[in-house]
Length: 268
Image (tube, rainbow, N blue to C red; front, side, top):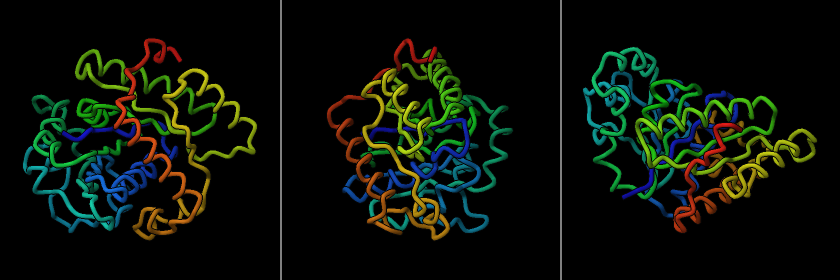
């Protein structure tokens, strides 16, 4: 049965979708059968791997409200071995409609239960908020990967996210683990960035990926071409970094080194 990892951070602009797209592509290129689940109404992860939903075609919105099965909605992508459960703007309405539905926090978990054994890895791109869609993703996931920009406000947001993860563990998903923290948009020349890195690595230790994702113009350009950076410019610094992160992630999964959320984390 494949492992499910939610890529989450309620703060926007930290490289969450960039990480979801390029990590999914990197893992698939290494030979792992991979599913990318887009739960962000912006649908950027969907378009970022070259997948376009025909107007009127079902999407993850239909899966969540119960009018379509996930297996009937999954699409291919520009990356061999990478499938997508796509999102469209319709997903904006799901937030309101889910409130009135039974087992509203279980919808994604139940929808993906039939698919988990078909993939080595399932990555869920969460919206930039601690919403019901994010709660669904955390309920479904075995682990949560947090992209973290090396700046002061990112640390403040991390506290709120880890508190939410802790609450989900207590009430919905006791097996949810902290898969790791990934430093993004990292510029080692910046003193504050280095200070944030030191603080995060001191507090979380090996839960922080060894590789940090650098600021890289190719990472910014690739979504406009509907390509992961690993296809857009495989030799770029961004592509090289995500290949390294994919290697680290698979190493962790193979070695069973994912960590339960530390008791002190919610007080970070």
